[in-house]
Length: 306
Image (cartoon, rainbow, N blue to C red; front, side, top):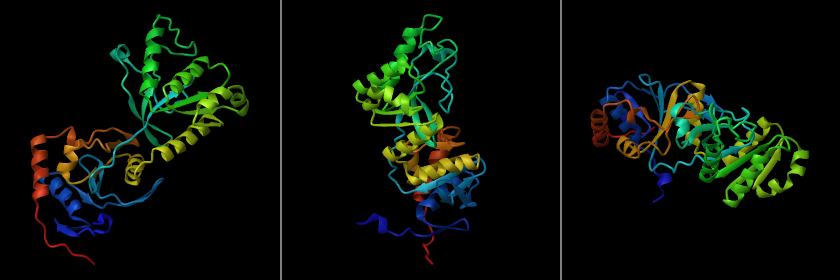
């Protein structure tokens, strides 16, 4: 059976004509959960294209896009960004409080418009990990080293930024990543540095030169080619940023979505992935599950087309 050629059944519920039974089941869920919804609110022109979201929930300032299951496998590449600890990375990499004494957990971030899982390196006020190459004033350089090594081991993609010829620690990190058979991408501030550090370039799957902004943008394009994002996820990510709201994609009916923890997609807030759907967090779970069951068992008027 060619699933792509199966036509959705338009369905009536609460005065709305939904484009599919699946959308209607989510409307039942919202109603039973006593959550106000607006079906197909205003459309948007976004970076990733024109978009008309399925639902808007004013109570949560949340847009919801409904898609048939199963959900695609979530794959935000795990990325390590080597280079001087100057603030060239487009997000905060400082850790605070007691966390500095614990193994650092990867962070969900957005790089050049692309969601990634950032594995390191990290810095803190105590473990400076500064241009002194980890020789911390408090004698914690061994912890900095172990943490950075763990981040390289954990990553899928290793990116190195060379702004000059003195990034000795970064060169060693490239060697470690190459020995661990990681996918390596290298950016250089200019062609002269590339020619001087040609051995590091030969370790890389891809290399390019330019300003840091140019190199990160090119790296983001490379990530999107190697780890493509489903269009609906790109749309909700851009919508969350443009509308200053939460936005998410759910696959299947409410029971299917909640059983999967909605982890296959997660939720975006201001363009950043949070991996927390509001109906999995600040909710009455018994009421949520009862509403999900009512949505699956709902019987509708006969669908109508045209």
